Image (cartoon, rainbow, N blue to C red; front, side):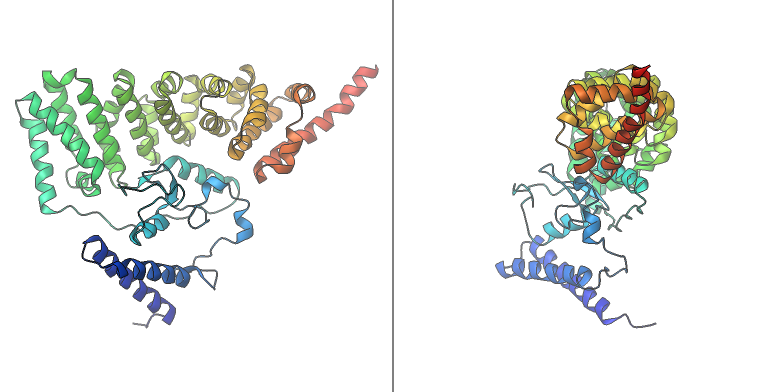
Amino acid sequence: MAKPPPAEEETAALRRRLRKLVASITSGCAGADAFDEAAAALASLREAEVGGSGKDTRGEETRPAEEAEAVPAQFLCPISSKIMRDPVVVESGQTYDRRFIVEWFSAGNQMCPQTQQVILNTTLIPNLLIRSMIAQWCTENGFSLPPLENQEEDHASNSEQRTYDEIFNKITSSSNSTEQKQAIKGLRLLTKRSSEFRALLEERPDSISQMTIARFSTPGLQNDPQVVEDMVTIILNFSLHDSNKKIIGDDPEAIPFLIWALKSGDMGSRSNSAAAIFTLSALDSNKEKIGKLGAIEPLIDLLEHGSIIAKKDAASAIFNLCMLHENRSIATSSGVVDVTLRAIGDQSLVEESLAILALLSSNYDMVELMIEFGGATCMLQAIRESECKRSKENAAVVLFSICMYNRTQVKEIEEDENTNGSVLASLAQNGTPRARRKAAAILEMMKKTKPMHNRHSSC
């Protein structure tokens, strides 16, 4: 077997050293010097992987600095300043690339790099909405979607497996509804705190079916809203483990139960159902099942009538589901265009609504609906009032589609610009690259219509 190059040997040695230091620190046996040594090892490892050659140890090209300027800021990891491969949310609510925030915590740092908030729970939640938006942006701009890093598997101990089985035995076999409720609550807490417990679903794939059947067959559980919320949240927690997404999607009871809770539960259950549907819809096969089983209409109802948290969960789920073309027509026939335009007008959910509309704006029938509900005026208002560059970009994308599919709208946009002040010229100079292209194209259309209008006015 060929001997690895010296640079790879050095990197491997640094990784082994860092693992030993981290193990020592997390076991509570390390002295104060271990933290400094771990930080130094991490810095050396990063320099060995990234510095000098422009490639990391796997031979992948790092993104040039000039290219970073073209990438929307929210797609860049605050630690590495690179486009995120696997965006995750930490306890402070900030999003980072998994690889770099794991290194940050492994080095002994206990604060959020951006907010400086102390992080007590280092559980990482996948930010699938941002990943979906990154995937869309990469496709539209001719970039390859960065591959996910290989992640270490979570393995439950024998003790954890016994605890899991004991809890499920109480849920499915106990004749005492109070004991069952306590067991369901306990499983909710364990699947929230422990990735090892979440991973156990792989070994017991019928767990969700057993739990939902136990609820429907036990009078004391059927109509208890807290039990419904706990069970929905258990499915949500399970869905955070990537390997579980297909297991849950293939479970005959799981998605129907989430949709039932989405329609009939209290606000907490509906919000968590939307969040679970969002995480599950990371798989295209689940997108199709969820759409066919009827989740989109209640999600749109939640987007319109839910609490602010529930609305955000619903918007994220709708966006992800509409990445599949078959679901876009379902969403449109269920009223998503009207609901999102009103949300933008009310300033209640601007960024999420614009992302959904931009996704739908490649379809003629959907654009016609946007025009019918005053989409052009709404998009111009969003460009004027939003401070988010991504929102301005999405509004410009929708506005460009409106102009392309219905040229009579160009004159109306021009009149609005003359009355309320031009924002397109500014966007063509100062927006994101995509926003600049769309704004410039609309301005060009406006120029081409002027001679025609002038001739008509002189006749």
